[in-house]
Image (tube, rainbow, N blue to C red):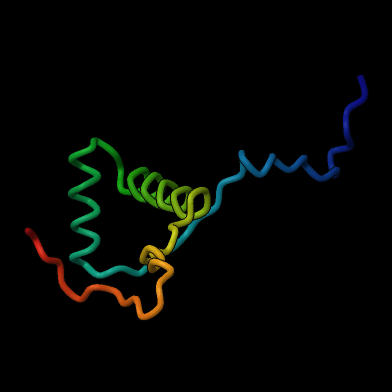
Length: 88
């Protein structure tokens, strides 16, 4: 079996295996809140933040919010939207 030379570059891990870091500057109260929530769930701050951020990213990219729009007006001349509801 052939071995690569000692000075050969190491194989890079797959993107899914590679890890990086993100540094955040957050207010003390926010950090305390995150720490408290992580503790309640039995997670580290990092685990909590990564899982929360990942969940939010999936929610935004997989199913983006659909802007609400009012139902169309009936097709009549002079139709307007009611300004208040009347109960009978």
